[in-house]
Amino acid sequence: MAAARDETKRCLRKFDANSDEQISQSGLVALFEVKLNANRLFIGTLRGFDQFMNLVINNTVDVSGNYNAHNGMVFIRGNRVVMIEALELISKSQ
Image 1 (cartoon, rainbow, N blue to C red):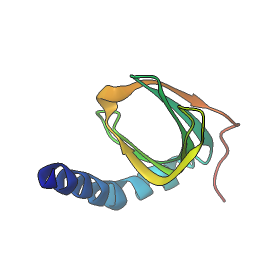
Image 2: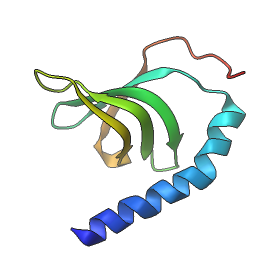
Image 3: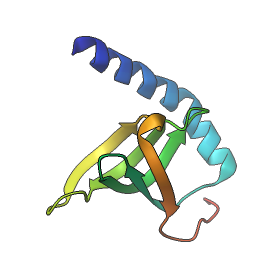
């Protein structure tokens, strides 16, 4: 369990270092819906990604069940992602 937690922290540090630059250069500011296997569904703002489609999403809401769970920042492994959909127009950040 501790090894998984350490791996998640390492990945988040990597995203903090690289993805802010990726996202700010691309100018993506939008709300995304991410559908995962096992019928999980998250909605939030994309913070970062990598070549394996691992995602970091801010202000995340888990809308999978009968209730909405607010999770804050979430790291999602790319092999769990089934679909990503922009829920609003993608605009350039100012």
